[in-house]
Length: 92
Image 1 (cartoon, helix red, strand yellow):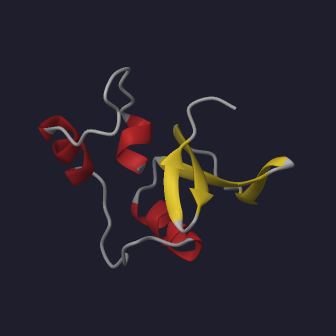
Image 2 (tube, one colour):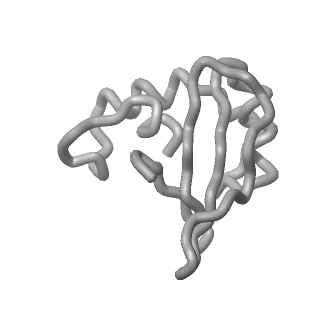
Image 3 (spheres, helix red, strand yellow):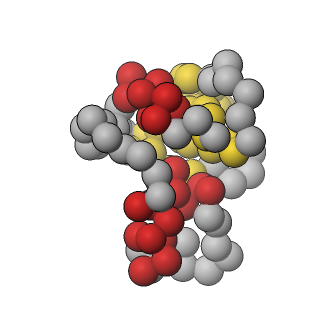
């Protein structure tokens, strides 16, 4: 999901194209187990010093923060965690 958030597309965003695989290879996931959990995001940020990741949850009352990065980074990723799966937040 992080690679899709960093490289958004207008159409067919759920498709895994060759270019998306290439972009994902540029990220460092060394030692991270999948599916990734909230604790693994700290490790991901250490391995990828240009990226910060914020994670939100959702209930009927609305969106709430689960993890807000304190790091100042050039690239920012916002993810929604629902049913142990992440999806990209494009717009609140």
